[in-house]
Image (cartoon, rainbow, N blue to C red; front, side, top):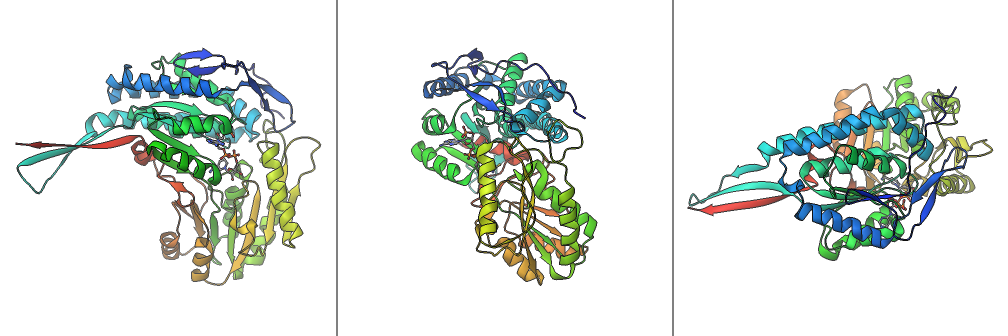
Length: 489
Ligand code: TAP
């Protein structure tokens, strides 16, 4: 059964620059492909570098000369709340667009859109609080002086986001940036541009002052350098792959921009002998197969203690085989297609390489669909620690499993990674869980679960998983500078 087969689609061939919908300067578009059946969903405006420049100029002008900077936090909060209300109002439609573009199951898309609205509401609250908290006194050792620390908007921010949670990833950057008083240029991933454009329509409907939010759809390889080197851009916030993150870091060095990066991961899930098997199966499956495994924090490395290994693996493989694949619009489907052909080929190539190297595949591989970018829930066992299946991010529904003997070995294996985004531990012994959680070298740690994400809590990674933290008050701080004002009296 399908939830609702169609909604009329909007116009996606315009860019949102300076509060107006404009055609790309060269009139170019690109196709948005439905990963379920490989059909063309619609055509999307393909911004030129000139369009990106215009967007930056609009954001600069809105920050320097527009009304935005004169508003109080409370007034900015009203816009954020109005955006959240419109997202709630259009939840079904926006979730439908995410399924078309990204392939994810509709229920997951609904959660994403509800979280997107929740993110705007959360930062509305923080924007209001800024009115009281922006200036705090600093106690100086010399009494002839007094001083305050004042938090102010960084300025013009550029957000470059990925395709795995299209609208939610936009919210993680747009909401705190606007709450802080920044203006922004948003560049969504080319594979999933529709809901970013819808966000522009919502911004327009709620009367967000012109130039505060500008949206340029197009190719990162063409627009990226303009957006990340332009001297009028003060801040770049990026979520995506490590290679592009490193490239952006170099480009943003041009005028030492404020930079936050949320990159990849290869997160470990450590399961001890005393764990409840059914609970472990549930969270392990969720941790790697949710969103088709296209999750930066996916717990894609599983470490199972010897005593529970055989029983747990039997149940895990049986349940992985039961996961229903299909159209994200069909009720009961738990695994949709991967986002696009590029990602599909990349994940299949990782699977084929592992098999060619003799690693045991307990279940999974290419799924039996005539069309669409489907990869079955895949589990490899006894994966060598120096194999790329263990060391590099697949970003698909592929789990790499190993056994371990004791706690020290589990911690060593979990931390032996270039990444440090997330980690999970499961055990009936809470003292052990707390110990292991503190020993993990990762920015996000889950005990007896995997992946729950809260707008209030910090999100980001150690090592090559990134720089800085999103969400919570940390997310707001990403878009604030701190100024010292000291007076001699
Ligand atoms: P990326 O290439 O990193 O794309 C992420 C964003 O960066 C997109 O908006 C992309 O635009 C843009 N971009 C691409 N080249 C750029 C450049 N030179 N300068 C500035 N921006 C640029 O990721 P992907 O191709 O979508 O996925 C590849 C791999 O990245 C995945 O397999 C996965 O490992 C990782 N990934 C990680 C995450 C998270 S949440 N950490 C999310 C998605 C992907 P276009 O879409 O137009 O290329």
